[in-house]
Length: 307
Image 1: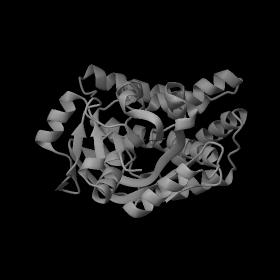
Image 2: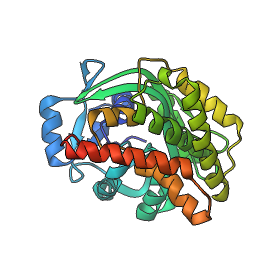
Image 3: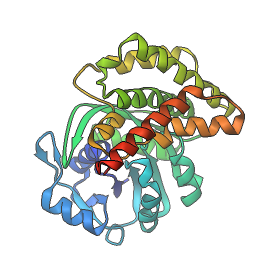
């Protein structure tokens, strides 16, 4: 794992990219960008905790074939990301998608072959992203593995790479269950925090807890229909984890809504609603929350605030 390509220079991609850059050097780690972003990032830079990041930015034509690709964009950029990745995916390339939700691995498998795609996500990263400045207080960790949970050589190689780079990670016993659990957490707490413009600590109240439970039970139902069992104990554990992060930080969706950016509503509540229709499962809470997010986005669009 000597040539690393990272797509997405937001809070997640920049932080883990810095760790890999410090280990391997600029010549072995590149951030894939288009010409416009390359010019802007080169001129303005990306700042991590007020320190300018020493990254190499390159277009797909300039980048070598990658041993490892880390995808850290938003879901609505996935189609463009797949096009950008085409030239850097080789026969032995491994792809880690840190996108929220449960759909990116499926789309990447269709584009490049399921043998290239590991299941993965980032969790526990507490950061604020404003313009070209990223401030983080907790680095979190990457959770990843093969879909069938086999401890393959590439899982061992990526684990060794992360060990050397100082990136916290976990290879769980059941990656698909962990991925769905993160999806359940995101669908409940990203959505509610975005609508309320709430910090993590603000979510520790009975009205939020009652709504979160309803959302999580709908996710549980569609997950079961998809062959994934999410124990009820995870719902209380997720609430404890989220609210313990305190009043200094906000979820990514909350930050997007506050900044007038397009949210990932379609890949949170929208996915639950879609799967509910496929399996004949009612999802009334997700339908209401999704409609409220869409309405708020429409208001921002009318005011010219959507980015």
